[in-house]
Image 1 (spheres, rainbow over the protein chains, first blue to last red):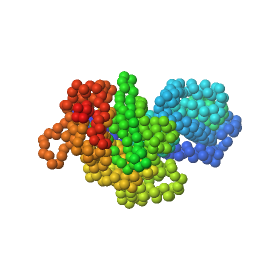
Image 2 (cartoon, helix red, strand yellow; image 1 turned 45 degrees about the vertical axis):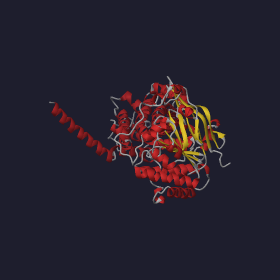
Image 3 (spheres, rainbow over the protein chains, first blue to last red; image 1 turned 90 degrees about the vertical axis):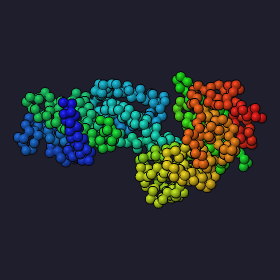
Image 4 (cartoon, chains in turn blue, brown; image 1 turned 90 degrees about the horizontal axis):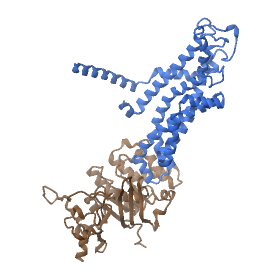
Length: 294
Length: 324
C-alpha cells in the first residue's frame, strides 16, 4: 500500500517536474499574445475602433452580438458600439495600471531601499507606516479617497498608488536586508563609496529581479482594483469607456442584454489571468530560489 | 620625521552592547605602524583581531561601539571625524582586503566597472583613461589578458583571480595603510603563496603600511616586520618578528608557537593549549590567560602591566616582573 503510494507520488512529481522544466525554457506564448493584443488596442484605439465609443444612436440600440456586421459585439441600450468601447477600455486599463504601477513602484522601492539599508529608527518609522498602509482594506481606502477627490483618471491612479506602494516597500526592504549583508557591499563601504552610490549601484541592481516579479504579479490585482472601483461607480465618470464601468452599466440588464456585462467581464478575466501567468513565468525564470522553495 | 608613525592606535576599546551583557571585544590595545612597515596581528578566532580592523575603518558593526582610546592617522584622531570625512579617508587613506574573495565582488557588474567605480571618486579623468588605469592595475596583480578581463563578470573567474581583482580594487586609490584580514584563508596553498608575494610587491611599489591579520605563524614569518599577539581583546605580546620567534615572552605566545607543526619534527600529537579562551563578556579579573596558564600564580589575579623585554619587545606577564 505504502509502496504503491510512493510510486504514484514519484510518478506524479516527476511529471510535474517535467512540466515545470518545460515551462522554464518555453516562453508563455498565450499570455504574451493576450498582452500584445491588449497593448496594441490601447496604443491604436482610435484607428482600430469602428465607432466613437461615446456616440449614442438610439436607432441602433440593443443589437445583440453577431447580428450586425457594423456592430460585431452588439450595442448597448443607448446604441453605443460594444467593440469600440472594449478597445477604448483597454486603453483606459493600460494607462491607469501603468501609471499607478510606475508611481507605486518608484515610491515603494525608494522607501524600501532607504528603510532596509539605513535600518534603525528610520526603518522602524517607515515600516510602521507601511504596516499601517497594508492593514487598511484596499477597496475601502480607495473608496474614501475617491469620495473626497471625485471620479476621474488621476484620482483613480492616486487611490491605487496609495494602496500598492506599501507592498513594494515591504518586499524590497526584505531583499535589501539580505543584499546589504553581503561582502561586496561592505567592500564598497571600505572603499569609501557614498551611501547613494552603494544603494544605486550595488543594492538596486541586486533587487531588480524581485522588483520585476512583484510588478508583474501586482498588475493583475491593479486591473481588478480599477475595474472594481469603476464598477462601484466611484472610479471613472459614468459613460467612460472602461471595462469596470461597462460591467456596472450592464448589470441591470444582465438577463436581457447579457452581452453588455459579458464581454468586459471576459476581457478583465483574460487579461488578469494572462498577467498572472506571465508573472509566474517571470518569477520561475528570474528567481530560482523562490522556485526551489515551492 | 621618518619615525613619525602613520597610524597610532592608543588604548582602543571597542565594546559590543547586547541586552544582557557587554562584550569587550577590544579591551584597550595600543600599537604603531610606520610607512612601509608590516604589522602582523595574530590570535585565535574571537580575540578581537577583526574588530580592531573595523574600528580603524570606523565601520564597527551595529551593537558595537568604540568607547575609548584614540586612533591617530597622520596625526589626526579618526574617532573625531564625521561620516563624510571618514569616507574620504577610507579607500584612499586606509583600505582593507576582506576574508572572502568569492563574495567581495558585485555579481551584476563586470570587474572593469568595479575597479573604475572606486577610482572615479577622486579623479575627474575620462572613462577611457580610467579604464586604461584599470588595465594597468589588473596587469599589476598578474591577471593574464587584463584588457579582455575588464569585461568579465566575477562568476567567470576563479577564486584566486577574484582575490587579485579585489586586491587591485583596494590598491586602486593607493592607500597609505592596507589592512588585510586573513586574505588567504579561503584560497588553496599555491594561490596563497602567490597572493602573499603580490602583497609584498604592492607594498614595495607603493610604500603602503600593511596590517596583516592572521592566525598563521608561517605567514607572519614570511610577511611581517612586527607582530602583535592578541588574546581576549588585549595585546599580550608585541615584538619584531625574529625576536618573537626567538624569545617568546608570554606563555600564550609560547603555547601558540609550540602548537605549530615543524617540518623537522616528527611528533604524533602536537602540544595544544589546555582549555578554552574566556567568555568575552565575562573576563576573569587580572590576566585573561591565567586560567589556562601553566605558570599562573597568585599575582596573576591582577592585570599585568607591559614589561619591556628588550628594545621594541613588550609582554604583559607578571613573570617578567620577577625576571627583572
